[in-house]
Length: 522
Image 1: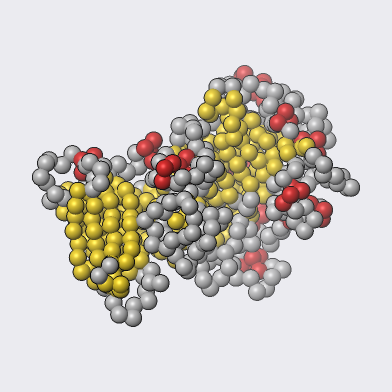
Image 2: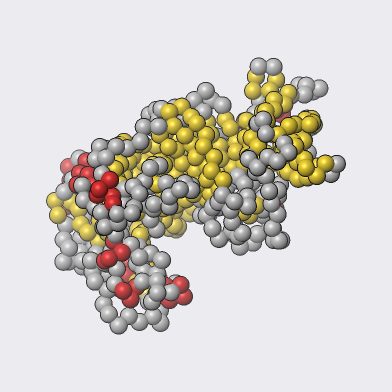
């Protein structure tokens, strides 16, 4: 303890030459410290950080080509000269990132603002006629760690844009994202509100530390929030998240914009990803690749242990599913297809993007898991969102506590679900153009371990706006797997989604996840 206190006194020495005008101040940065600031801010109307960005850095003057010329100088990374497990590099403000973020470094006894320093960046041929003020802030930051090779620092995390962030486990490539909070996401009667992380506190680790400790303030028109992150890189990178949300009173939320509707839907632990199509998709695109997606399904682990798999769909219109839960054990957007042959893509490593699994800390009670699927014509749009909406929503000016763990993983690392849905294939019935033919593949140790000659039972349910004219089960294409083939015909004139469920059983024993699918009429 004495050694740590002495180390804290010299924590900022390596950084001081760059920011001598913003020296360290005594402070004990804790969740209470950040929560107090978030609560104070909730009593006043939201102020956008865009006002602090110099005009010549805005998107109408700093375009994509100019912005990409700006590179961070790696030798200027935070803790670059210290023998620590982490380094931090900063993103330049401007272009699309018009909301500057203020970043602080803290030790057990002190805190110091990391002011904007132009010498941290290589501007290439780009010239600015004006100096960027030191109090401008950054667009965000990225975290480096020798995760894949000793002594070689790789990027393992990125915190930039609104409240979005991405992390990586060993050997993974960026794909799906997490964010702090989702407000009115997927609602058709009001626009979505995007909260932003406006302030960060980055804890300088000690040489023996394997975790990175972060705090943040989230701010938006409708609410503020205090966030704490403990991040441990590894084969599966784990992030423990604690949040306290303060909802603004309606008059404060409407201040400056009387027409504004304060957010009505608060979504916690939101995940965002991209799904364009997969080999079995009903909606096809003119592309040489058989599949393009960062995630291919939503998995939910219910209180009773039932696992339900919801294959992602890129339909012609937005779809918003609401799945009621009670004391959910977890949910996540997973990437199950890990074979590069199913992507045939040399430039985008979709087979290496992480699954993100959300595990509640404590009991979440009654609530709803939301799955929002936007329609897209390309892979350039993150069109999938999943989040949890608690039945008890935040009340004005009262702290609403929420905590969970995020696992950035390949599914085999955490063994979230071993007896699983392997694929969904859908197309027209050749004998009846109004009917759809659906093939669902299942596999796992329970199925491969069945005695010879034993055929599992397919338990199938269909909503009342359609009928199942046939269902059969066959041994699958690979040993120990099984395929269920269904023929579904929507009722005449039906325009609503058709709900379908299928799972495999042997007597009373469940042998698989519950495949859950909503088919939307053209």
